[in-house]
Image (cartoon, rainbow, N blue to C red; front, side, top):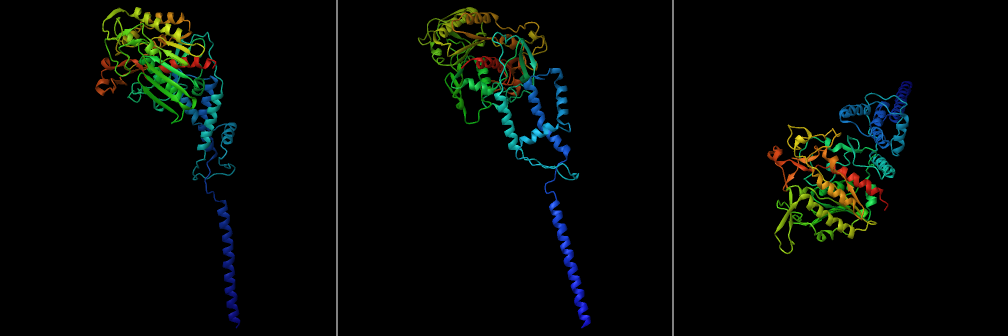
Length: 503
């Protein structure tokens, strides 16, 4: 009996000991689970580096807005890029910057940095995609609300220099403008260098206003902007479409072509950017917008009504005519009318024919344009770069393989531009009753031997083959310009005038 009690007592002690041990282990497990970091925390330095990388682009933007380090010279581009890269990988940001970044992320995970973090723990990704988008939208809104400094009315915008500026230029990316035609998309067509996109025109005595697509569109609200002329004005029209469309969402913009008229429509602003094909402004046998490759070009210098009826009611008109005058020394002037089947013509000197045409155009503008509603521009001659000897490159082949502008701007460059036509256009536009803004693109464009489409384009609607591209002497197009590129600068001149006009 006594032995049985001892045995029961021993069993009770063993069971009770196991019970106490189990309770003890359970408490330890609960404690360890409570303290276990399910999401590992990054080290303080790693968070600082993340903040630095996120904040540097903002810092660069602010520098640009304030006008500091707004451009770099070509010789220092590589050096400055290396310095920027070094700044981006520095291991810390200031407390104010980090606080600003954290405050802007309302849903950002708060992480304590007071406890040491084990080396083997992995970094976590902070949820911030939506917040970053909101921050970018806020920055964009602040930038849009920022006042733009306009150049003085008396400032000569067309005398200055080309400055390499890969911070603010190009104003848009080639692959972000779906409306560009294959004629001007040089990078897509195989061009390897892109420096031609990053040259900014700097007037000598003032500065062009900072381009803001939203400001331009507000000025174009309920209005029509139309380019009238030849393929160089179409080149500039494509540029303006890209500049305007950059902030417009898909489905709210469209492009339609009917006959000689192409219309880019911006729904939310009830605005249009249009192009009307009229290479001589007056009637000619080259007026067909599709079939106009005619060597024997004939004009009717006093006939403009057929074209002019399409220009009425437009708020901004941009005219040009030049390149189609340049294939012969004399111009053929029709005796009679195309409608009457006339075929006989007289040949007269190019400047005389040009003067007759512009007098007809000026008469139409003075009669049909209300200057209180419509602003009129006339663009001067867009130059060609056919002879590389013109810029002292005896080894060159036309404009092919040119990658930088002519850097010596101390003396005028002669590239074969017919300055007689320039004088005619300048004098007639200055003597008109209706004010006309003469956009002098000629001299500044003559230095841009690097910006042509060259062999990275189409010919008669087809892309140049590799064999044709290897023969620039025959196939290089040294008339038209790559986009983004030089025509964007021409549009910056228009932009400066448009945004300064009181609506």
